[in-house]
Length: 454
Image 1 (cartoon, helix red, strand yellow):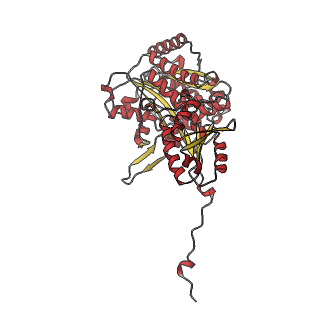
Image 2 (cartoon, rainbow, N blue to C red):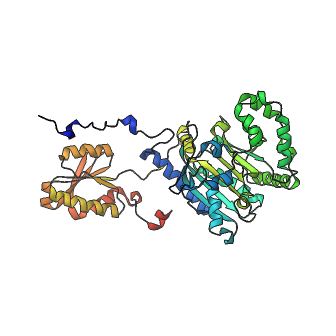
Image 3 (spheres, rainbow, N blue to C red):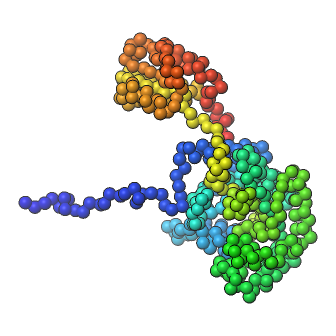
């Protein structure tokens, strides 16, 4: 007897959990963590509205040249960390590794230079870098950022630094970080180019004492030699020329005025001559917020001025400044500091029912409860009332509404106080009124389109 050919075909092996786990460097944001993300986003949006910033969202991927032209071919991001791919027409696209390049591209594409200046924008978005995963650093990560385009006054720099600090204060972590600040000058030949020339001359002949990466930086991006974390490179950097000795008069006056403005705002800072940032587009002001205990290893964000970037991307010369911060790192810091965040996810009422008619009434009641701001869930399966009450205990609800065959027949419902273990019978059409009274108006989560907008 011959076998059915279908029976002899090899079956595709069943995938294991290990085969389907998330790739290295990405992670799920589970409900408990979303409470932190939600709270952080609300703080950001609140402070943005107060300061006149409007939200922008740029595409998740752009043409690769947007980032190459803005960030610079010599930066670590472009040379080693971008997720790039070709579309079906052979065009190179890249998942955005940072936010400023896309904002500047959008500023030019949509003629924002015709808007009232300065243009103040903010974003809250995921970004992507092929980086070495470690605590607080992922290959897909969330950042929020603020950008101001069209104004060169150091008061703008002071305001944007203050905004960053105020957000950290709102989150309860400002005291855990120190503001590091520096000026890396401008492209005037007697300013940064002169410094870079002397910096390169200082390092020439010392290659054997430098890490492999810094040997490459010596030719491609000498400024990055100053912030290397390798021990031998740190020693070399201590004796290297300092940017402050090369600043042109304009950059020097700009930086001094900024520091005075920060002092006037009561913002403490550390002048850090080794702070250069990792992106090519920065000019003059650069700053970061470092962990007060571990320093640059746990910086949560930073930024600076990028006065030449708009022109570099094809626009007219336009001064600009911005900053970005990693949300995962901030949330990790909040957790380590024992900070809890308010939540609206607690359930008020569990609805238990038995029988089809009771289920109909339960569905109608649940809709009415939600419409007045009472958060509720219901057991809509066929389990016994006793089993449903066990589920209600797991939700930790203060009250459970019970409707069985008897209650349906009598037009009533049972409201059970889960903490006290007591219960009362009320008319079905009075359940809503009774629950509002016992919960209190201030506990209701009423829907407001105006509030949801923000």
